Image 1: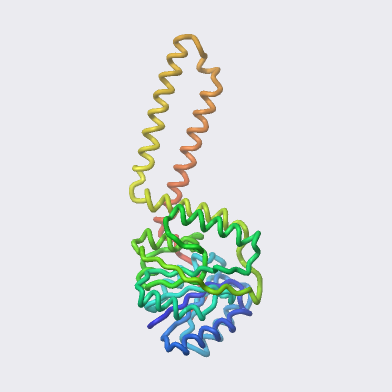
Image 2 (image 1 turned 180 degrees about the vertical axis):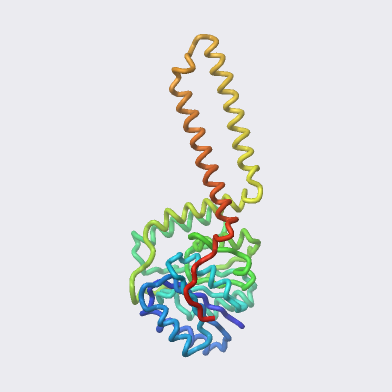
Length: 311
């Protein structure tokens, strides 16, 4: 099979028939063998009924319905698990991504040898204040931290070699950083293509401003795990050694001052405050790291309650 198209969706019943018609037309015009995997992330409208209707008309359409809303990363991860095409294309269901971009994305992967090609919505029709400006700052930060020269990490329109999606795992809200995860997994040939961004025709956006805060926390988690996930002692050993050395020096200084009668140890508020913040900071950071390790090694991390399937 040439192409698997993975479409995560949430409450997009109006858009789906138009998207399916558009995809079918492009696939037929270019002679691709294909499948379309629509992952319903717990929609509360008639999206699943639309998917069932598409399946009845065309067996190339497959569907997975979550019992509740888990998020885009979960939908992509399940879609990747079902994908069988040589090239896997992801796109959003809101008609802001154009299926006309698929043939060129496919060519870049098959002929130019890219592991991953990310879309770049160079001209956007979103709100500048709510989306464009924060998005540019977010992408700039991610470029600097990851070393991947992409302009739009969060673009939903991407193309992958099948090996890539079968080798990576997406959970939480990590869908923003799939290029970073792919690079970490050893897939370093990552390209970019300017793609068309269209105005939303139906419904409203499903993402709020909290995605930027969560996005940066996820980025820090990925960067930390990529460097120290296998050898945490390289990080914590260094921090622990430095803390012990500073603590020892501070103890010597305090003891000397106490012996000289310069201070009363129990009356030194700065000593207690510095120790309090040092201990709290170390405990909180260690708790976050241990929590991340537990999450990554949990057997139920990517277990989702699936209500129905059409595969």
